[in-house]
Image (cartoon, rainbow, N blue to C red; front, side):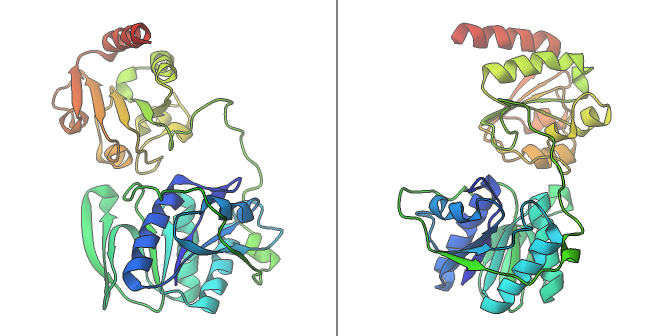
Length: 322
């Protein structure tokens, strides 16, 4: 079988897990193997309803009352035990911060190599993969061998799996052998998200701001435009380093990787670390005074000018169109 590791919240797979399902289904079809999935935590059983039409034959749920939130060592150990029991041909996880951490634990426990950030996978003898390296600045062709081929999927390298109306997939509970020491690292509390705020990772439109915004107060115009467009605000690393906006809004290699229909980059020069985070946008509009800035040269459209002059005009035009 091909096993896909599902990260879920309230019974729904997140976007990156849906993308992993797309790769998992193609591998299952190519290898002639059934496609299985595994989930854990509150609402794990409800994932079965969200997998209708994705090609998943069985959903394994990791049953342990202590797995109420992210606990990488415990989850990694549980997955390793499931893999050692069922011997899947391949295990596909996400390359999110959590997914990568979990899959690293799995690889260490079962002593198998892990190919991270894959954009293409071809089964064979051995398997061939193409994966993102060096902060997205190059693609590496590599071979992967092992009893179970462990992979993580580069964010937005695949379209999310299409979900159809249908019966939930069968659920098979799995009870791992976990000790209290396996929960030494775990989430113990959360900062609640601002009510009504659209997730940066899921936003169809993202309005990004960099050093050129000038100050924390300068983001008021970006907030206004994002609200008008039903989008979210993202920022470059220099903005979070300056304390103007929280890290949760950072787009880039060490932040969130986004794939909106439109990314409006305001006063962002376009360092490679930031480009890695926004390269999956379907279209980029750059607003910058420097026509030679990397972000401008990579943009679909560009406005060369002061964002503090351009943005009010854009906001007025959007209001008029509405």
